[in-house]
Structures are given as structure tokens and as C-alpha cells.
Amino acid sequence: MPSVMGLLEERERAARQRVEALQGRAAGSKALWERFVIASETVGEVLAEPRGDEDVAPPFVVAGQRRVQVRQTVPGSVKPHWEEGLGPAVLAPDYQRIMEVLASGNGMRGERMDCRQLAAAVGLEPVPAKVEGVRSKAKRLAARGWLAEERPGLFSVPVGRGIGS
Image 1 (spheres, helix red, strand yellow):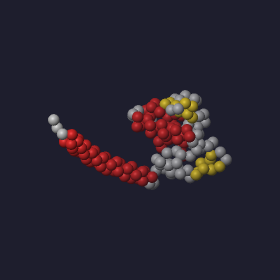
Image 2 (cartoon, rainbow, N blue to C red; image 1 turned 90 degrees about the vertical axis):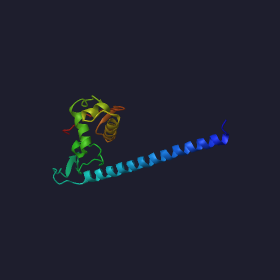
Image 3 (cartoon, one colour; image 1 turned 120 degrees about the vertical axis):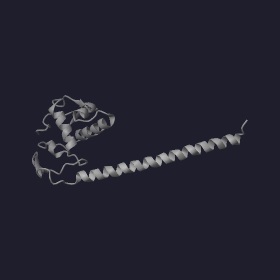
Image 4 (tube, one colour; image 1 turned 135 degrees about the vertical axis):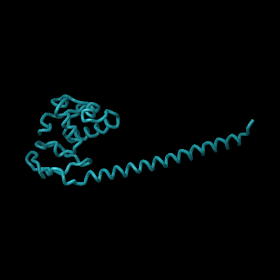
């Protein structure tokens, strides 16, 4: 029969080996994560730079009784609150696609689309990560008055806020 001290030392050695293995994997995972953070920041910087070969949008649009300055729309830019006369052209391209899909088809006149349908309609695979990205964009648009969300996760374009507005 083995001694109690021998059993404890054996278990301690096994636990230490597991901890060392996990620490090695954690260090590798952290390095990979840091590479993704750097890549994401770099891509954001590249996309934010003006290319010069694109059509330049007019510097102002009329919204209600005032002029609103149009900034270059890039991913990550601030989404303006909807105002009378303000069209989706002031939104970043991904947000414009969501508005276009909802305004041109199922989302008009009170008909709603859920985020899975919306993700598929804008050309994304309806996998959870893509659906959540679309959901967050649609929620931002709803919070700023561009979309209506009568029930959680179901979005539509209020009358008068389509692509032609």
C-alpha cells in the first residue's frame, strides 16, 4: 500500500504538469489574440484613409430646415440620428446595405425581418457571429431613428425613411 505522502506528491506533480501545459497554451493564445488586435487596428486605419479615386459626396445635405455636413462614411464612423430629409447616404456602407434591403423588400410598410433573414439578405452566412454583427448594426440604426424595432430582433423601415429619402 502506497504512503499518503507519496500519493500527495504524485498528485502535486501531475497538477503542476497540467498547470505548466495550460500556461504554455495560454501564452500562445494571448500572442494570437494580440496579432488579431493589431491586424484589426491596421485594417481600420487603412479603411479610414481617403483613396482619392472615389466619387466625392456633397459636403452638405439639407435635413429639415438646416444643412447637415456629410462626412466621409467609413466603417466605425458615428451614425447620425435620423432627421427629416436626411438620407441613408450619410451612413457607412454596411448600414446603407441594411437600409436598402429593408426598404426594398420585406422591411417596408410594417413588414419586419429578423436578424438571421437580414444577414442572409445582405449576403452574409447566417451563422451566429455574422447574425450578431447585423443585430448590433440594426440596433444602432433603431436607436438613432433609422429603423423601427417593434419586437426585440424584428426590424423594419418606418414609412418615409427608405433609400429615396
